[in-house]
Image (cartoon, rainbow, N blue to C red):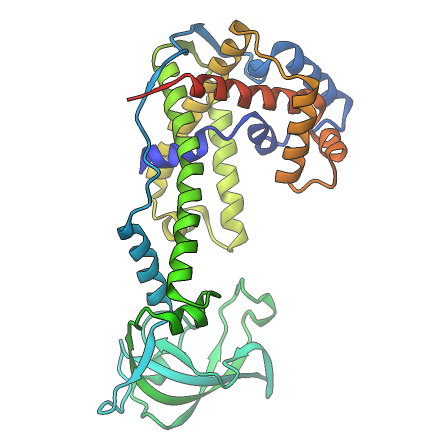
Length: 367
């Protein structure tokens, strides 16, 4: 887990770090900072840290990365897809709802006698596992002991706060629920009919071919990042540094804040978000962030030293091409708007950072 997570995040690039820290060139103060960065090079953001000895960077050894897509990987993707669309088969001899049952229901929610938006199944039927906590408190428990074929009214109160719809927070509502059947979920057969209905492809074979191509592309893109990480890790391991604890802490704080922002999008505290979205404890996350910050700072210092040692520069043509690509990647209105937002020096140093990492990676030897 650690190597994969760090590999994905470590080489986020100089511009990504700048964006995370909120650098902007709108003010005179920030413009001066940008000029200082241009003169000082890639590592000017870290004046308190230095590389005291640059180790081997030409021909470092890295592990070979396989990009082969196996039949087992294809089948695993298909199995996940099948599990997402199970067939609901009624259990004929079961008529009373118990905890743990899957019930097929229709429901209509009313607030002050009027249906409210998002509170209805629309008559299409909905499979609900009793005890899953998918609905607000009291909904699932209210169906326990009820018989198939009956309709029940459930007077309930929405929690406060209620992030999905703040307008419903603390409101008293009544759900009218019709219990159609108690069902079991059966994995459907993988065939042309299923593929046509759920994948947008006419045949299972056509979807499998598309899936193989997609996985191949993903693996090749991932392999690039992995090779870059392995190459720079090798350089760092053979070099010596003096790192400022204050600058390391600033990196840790910026990364933690970034994930706190992600969590807030889902109305969650960071610890809950980590468990639900990443299957990580806060302790594990803090350890990962500490490793990431150490790597990122040392990587930036090493890249700066290599660029200077090899006289690596960004030509005007490379700058214009790179600026356009960055503007597209970040969804900017235009390259000019992107350059105005971040400043030419920041963009140029970001491109120089990437070019230098590629220089090291291209010369690395896969073992």
